[in-house]
Amino acid sequence: MNRNIRKNHPKNYLVLVLLIYLVAGISILKYYRYLLNPDGISYISIAGKYLNGDFSNVVNGWWGPMLSWLLMPFLLLGVEPLLAAKILNLIIGSLAILIVWMFSHQFPLSSAIRKVILFSLIPVVLSFSMSDISPDLLLMCLLFAYLRIIFQPDYAATIKKGAICGVWGSFAYFAKSYAFPFFISHFFIMNVLHYFRAETKQTKKKVVCNFLAGAVVFALISGVWIGLLSNKYGELTFGTVGKTTYRIKAAPDAPGAGVLWLGFLEPSNPTAISAWEDASRLKIPPYEYMDTWSFVKNQLRVTSRIIGKMANIFMDFSPLSIAIGIAYVLFWLQRFNIKTMPAEVLFPTITIAIFAGGYSLVRANPRYLWLICLMLMLMGGYVLARLFENNFFTKTRKAVILIIFFLSFAIPAYQGLKSYANRGKSVYNLSKVLENAIAPHSNIAANTNWPISLYLTYHLDCKYYGVQEKNITNTKLKRDLEKYGIDYYLFWGGAAPDLRFLSNYEEITGGRIPGLRIYGLKGRR
Image (cartoon, rainbow, N blue to C red; front, side, top):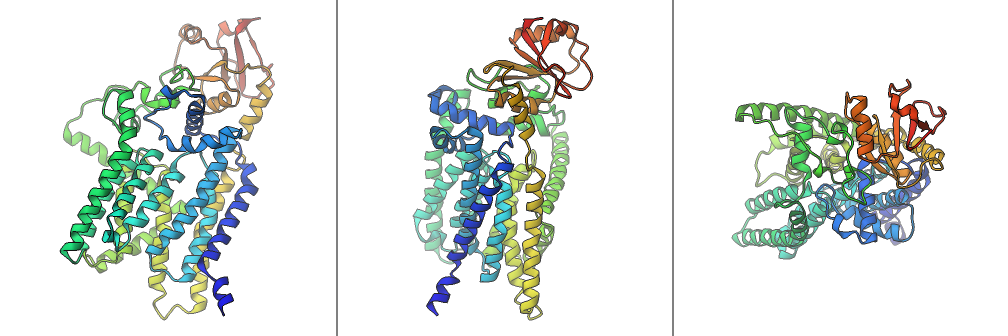
């Protein structure tokens, strides 16, 4: 009897799931080995700055420091940076499974439902960890660790819980600056909810003490990085992403990222690969003044568009997402009372509203919403738990529904993994072809194809000056190439360029690479 109990212990299933996840991740890692993104290049570059002692350039208002910190041990061991980032993502994914499993105990779920959720995490978290190099998976882990504490009914039992919330909140801020406004607003609102749900004055007083403890700890820890940022940029700031992103994405005359239209740009600092390493330094057009009503109308238009995109993201995550959302709306209508509403209904919906609300002002990207996606999975488990209370659901029917529930998350995750398998490998292979012709540390610019040219530059260990201005004249292009000391000019496109001055220079590919000509500008024919 005792042997069977040990065999079926929930922690045994957790160990099994983690083992399957890690074995599967290591097995498929080769298919995502060269998947690269501009943000990932910046995090890798900043990690290298720490190791090289270039401390004057590690403080960056655009990229949080924690992902670069975590990359440093791998780089010290000599692991190739891109591979190191993938291994780190895989490790963070295993922590995500562990933390989500721990957090799932805030929901009253049966053992069967909890196991199905646990196994559903394998393909889902694999799809997260094998995607872009970004801090979003790390952010999700840290915020779930925080939510696990703030969601607890006995949160006010000891002041230590409030202080720990402050620690997790500041760590999340170090991962990504979006966590700063999210934690401040969420921690405040959650403490207000705990205060009004408390049954005694003594408990209410403990809630206030916990809030103050968490706020002080958060301010002390995060204040160190805020001080460094403010000193660098000459103004009080917790990050530079928000206001810049609004101007390039959500303002009425939003021009898009400056790297796409400003023309050639010097890298952000002497050891940077490109200007994207600190995008807050890029010039943006002056804000066009709007009256209040025009501003509101524009924001409503932007937000409605983003909310529609978010709905599509959630449906891509699982076809059951909208059904889960509707079920929770019905739970709210059933008992619309903050004091008596079940915590597993009230707290997740408040969290989702705050977390998604911030992004709805500017932009939505699937990886930004991973926290909500996994929250929806747990909420879906709670919906099933409520449904299974009905005698209509026999053991067989429950099993069928649980299988459908698992597949609704597993199939989209598998499709995601399949869609970006081997992505980036062709650019890496191209770099191997060119590495004997293009010397390391050379200056590279291009006519178009900004991201692909950046990836190629990264693999060649060169510096990237971006793409030329649109509709640029030949005279100005020639002047700009000389001004920035460009060694190699990448011309993407099938037709030969009408740039006569380039005929004086060698086209180093010899026409052997379809769609790409590369001109060496330092040596005449």
